[in-house]
Amino acid sequence: MGDRLGEGSGNFEKHFKFELMSFYTRKQLDDLSTRDNFGSEEFHNAVQLLFQKLSDQENLTISEEYFICNIIDTSKPLGNAPEISSRNIINCNNYNFRTVYLLYWFDVNGHSKYLDYYGEIEKNQVQTDVTYLENEFRIWEAELNKKHNGTEIIDFLARETLRQLNQSAKYCKNNQIGYFKQQYFHKSLILHSKFIFLIVTKYYQEIGRNREEIDFFGKTILLNCFSYIHILFRHFSAKVKEHQFDKTYHFDNNIDPDILPEFLSWIIEIYKVNLNFKDFDLSIKFRFKNAYYVIYFKEISESVKGSKIIEYYRLETFYPIKKSDLEYQTEISVSDELAFFVK
Image (cartoon, rainbow, N blue to C red; front, side, top):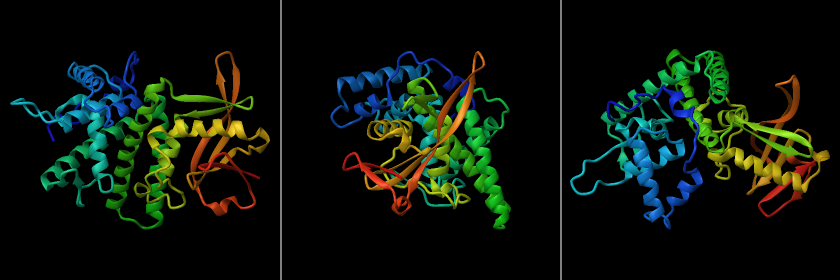
């Protein structure tokens, strides 16, 4: 991994505080990457444009960065052209972090066997990658420790990360876990919080705001970055959170964490069409593709300009449950794949 990998990673304001006037969406880029469109004129136009923006160090969305940096890493140079690696490109920092983290997340200290597309990763590369993750850990921890981060996503994430760290420390104390293992848990959670940051920022970059307000029988449901961060941190990636032994986790492929708010909004909209407000008890319980889930809400109020108070049902959490948790409830089938449960 080149010396420049990670350079500038701490300059979050530069990378995430800008107006996106025109950009490729995640869906557009996913469509271009399909077998039918790969190599098409539209595909080559996108690659050329994004590579030029990358070369000129113009701002890219995270989706655009992931797309073009992956193209760079998977393309062979033509003729005698030198090989280019995303690992030597500063503006591929987010892509590189995600790539390295997903290879090492289960043991970020480098004491295991690691595999990539080409087989087992050589020890000298493992050491380079582990050093890179150590550097990213220190940069991101410093960012989370700032009193005023200036972005709502990082502020919410800092609070949730602190909560996770405190729970982990308490778990270690109660179970007499040694100092070095405690430090490992600490580092692992900090790195995981950056991984979550990139997922959440990637999603909200495209819609241009950090919240969605959904009309709900004349009331308003608030689904914001707090909801998204809360769910990703508490109910995904179980192996990163040994201290959360009392939680249930999403292990199935029904739920794509990259577009989680989109899925939850879809469930709420279908609920509105098929049920009544009297059925709502600050929760929505449902079956989707033979798995069972619950969404919980909380009544909150927000002050806005002019001393006006707005009340919301904020989406608090979402996680899988057992079929037995739905005993004595009535099933209302919407389709073969989806059904709701009410008392």
